[in-house]
Image 1 (cartoon, helix red, strand yellow):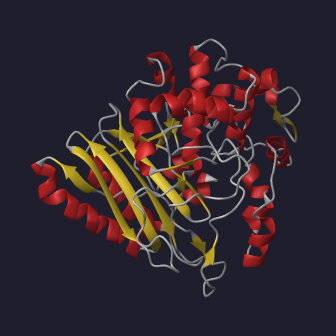
Image 2: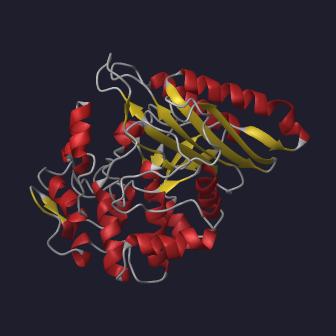
Image 3: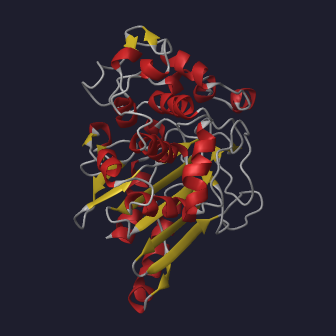
Length: 379
């Protein structure tokens, strides 16, 4: 979903299964952090981390308010906009193979699709789509499901299926935020177009390219693109939403998952494996990885993440203990995910949690709690 909505996001916790140094104190601290995150307003929290000391995991809260069962260790969750990093990796593999160029225009691959109200696909490059510097409007603001304010509205809209072209048409109703390359603004429209370009270049759906280029080579047995299926498999965490401050908690787990901007389903272990492989050089050649990690300031997000910058489908921020980590969080309908990996791929952490904040609650304490968890695991 729109990362503007997912900025209630970022968490991590761990119980170490590792060396004596880790086993002495880190598990207790990270479990306290998991509980603290839950106490900011989450029904369930699940996280995993891998460091040179070993692999760890933690959970807090419940998987479902009705059953009271604990969060499953292998729970599936919607990773939201973390999908963008997977899709960017595919596009950059195609660049490395000479099948696509970062300076290709949208018009080159999708003629006539991006036009109107000052939008012009002939002036927008693949690099600008990947880096969120195209200036394209946000389609998600026009999706009826994103605008519902009641349980009845959610149930009416949640199964409605959209094609990528429909999402782009929604965006084209609006003027661009700025001329291509003249600014930075997060827009899910960019990655709908990247998915469509991948399909044009390869002649197969982007989901097929994901399977062949990422999922199978890395052995991500619990990661998949759901297509138009609205259902999240078991085991899972149920997600809830209050449509009014004093309203009931409504189960919002089941809905049309969207497209190449935010639709993937995974687990913390699989997400960690992906990021370790990506930064460790297993998915991209050095030239393409270097392009991916060239960043521009992501100024709107610097209020949440220190010195945040955006590359090509991946973000970076500064750790309080020094150095940088790479990440791309995601969220939609109170299913929040976040992750971070060091530049050498040796330390990585990911988290999923079900936020239960009321519409009138300030999300900043939850953001701070989840960011602290990641910092503790990676510092």
